[in-house]
Length: 632
Image 1 (cartoon, rainbow, N blue to C red):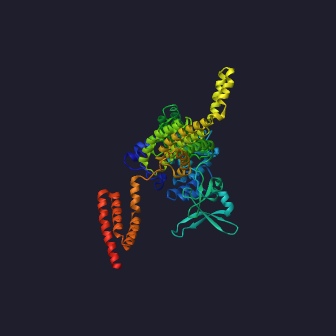
Image 2 (tube, one colour):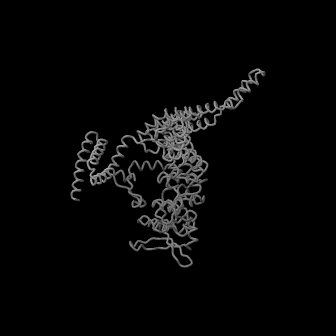
Image 3 (cartoon, rainbow, N blue to C red):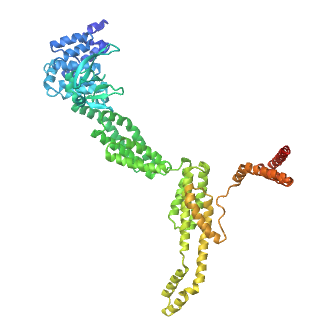
C-alpha cells in the first residue's frame, strides 16, 4: 500500500465491496492511522469484530459470491453451517443490509458461546487468552449504538392490531416459508404462509426492516416476533424489539442513564426555588418542563412506560412540575394565576405513569379547572376582585340592611364598569350582579323577618327583671305592678312594634331602590327578587310610601314603542275619521287626526317632526276625502 500510494497509484482489495460499502479513499495518512490503531492485540480484536473472517473452505465459496456482488448468495451459504466464522460473517452481512435484528441475533450466538468466541479471537490473535466475552459484547454494542443510535436498538414496535407469532399461528395454522412472485413486477420474494385444517392460506410478508428469515431463524426467535395487520388488511411479520435480555439492559444502563441523570439534575435545580416568590416558582416549573422535554422523549423511545426506571423518573419529574404550579397559584395574586398554573398541571398529568402520581395530578387539574370555569373575563379582573373583596367583608358582618346598602353602594360602580365593558346581556355580568343582589336581599329579608318577631312586652319584662335584680326587695312589688300589667301597655306595645317595623321596612326600601336599577338573571329576578319585592312593597303600601314601578321604560324605549305602535294607531284613526265623515262630524275628527300626527312627529324628531306630521295629515285627509267622493 505504501509503495503504491507513494507513486500515486490507487490501492484496492477484493473485499472493499464498493457496491455495498462505497468507495474507499486510502491515503498515506489513513494507512498510517490504521496501522497505529492495530498495534496492540486487544485493539486488533476489537476492530476484527467489524470485519470478515475466513476460517473454513465454506468461507471461500461464500466470499466468491460476496466479491461478485451477490451478498444474498453468500448469506445462503453461511446459513448452511453454524461456526464462529459463519456467525461473524452473517452478522456483518446483515449489518451492511441494515437488518439489525438478524445481525444482533447472529452476534449474540457468537459471543454468548465462550468456545465460539475464543476460536474467533484465536484466529485474530494466536496467543490471546480470552477469559470473558464482556468487553467484546460492550465494544460491539457501543459501536452499533454510535452508528445506528440507541433509540433504533431499543425501540419497541407496537400496533393497534398485533399478535405474538405463536398466538397467530394457533389461529391460522402451520407456517412455512415459501417463494412467491409479484404479479405486477415479476420480482421474486419469500413470505410466510399459514395453512389451517381447511387448507385456507394466510400470507404474512416479512417487514422490510426485518429481512427474509429462514424457518429456523423464525423458530429460534418466535418469542420476539409479532404479526401486525396493516390498514390495507394485509399482514406483516415484525420484531417486537431489536435487542433483548442482558444486551438490552446494557444499552439502557449506558444510554438511558445519561438522560435520567440530566432530568434528575433539572429537578434538583427546580427544587432550589422552593419558598421563593410565586413568579420564580412558575418560572422554575416552566424551565423544568422546557429543559427536560427532549431527554424525556429520548428516554420514552428507549424504555416502555411500564419500565420501572422510566416510571420512577417520569413520576418524579411530573410531581415536581406539579408542585411548582401549586406553589405559584397558592401564593400569587395574578388574576390569571389559575390559567398559568393549569399549563404546568396538565403537562404533569400527561407525563406521569404511576397510578398514585396520576391520581394526584388529576385531582389538582380538576380543582384548577373549576376555578378557571368561574374566572371572570380578563378585561374585568380588577372589578371582579374588588367586588369579591366587598362580598368577603360583607359575609363577616351581621345580617343587617345597613350592611346590604353599603355592599350595594360600594359594588355598584364596579358593576357599571363591567356592564360598560361587556354589555348588559353578558352572562358573567348578569351572574355577578345577581350574586351581589342576592346577598343584599338576604339581609333585607332577614332583618324584616326579625322585625316582625320583635316583642315590646318581652323587652319590657326583661327590663323589669334587671331593675328588680338591682333594686331593694321592698320595691319588687312596685316594679312588678308597674311593668307586668300587660293591659296597661297593650296600646303602647302595638305602637312601638309598628314604629320599629316601619323603620326597618323604610330601610329596606332604600336597599330595594338600589337593587331595582341593577341587572339580574331572569330566573332569579322572576322567582326570587320580584316576589320578595312585592311582599316588602305591600308593607310600604300600608305606610303610604310604596316603591316606584319596577324598571319603567326609559324615554328612548318609550319613543320606540310609540313608533312601533303608530301604524296601528293611524289605522284606527283612519277608520274613525271615515266614520265621522259619514256622520258629518268630519271637521272635529280631522282636527284630532292632525294633532295626533303632529304629536307622533314631534316625539320622533322634535319641531321638524311636528311639521312633517302636519303635512302628512293634510295629504292623508285629502286622500280619504277623495276616496269618499269616488264612493259617492
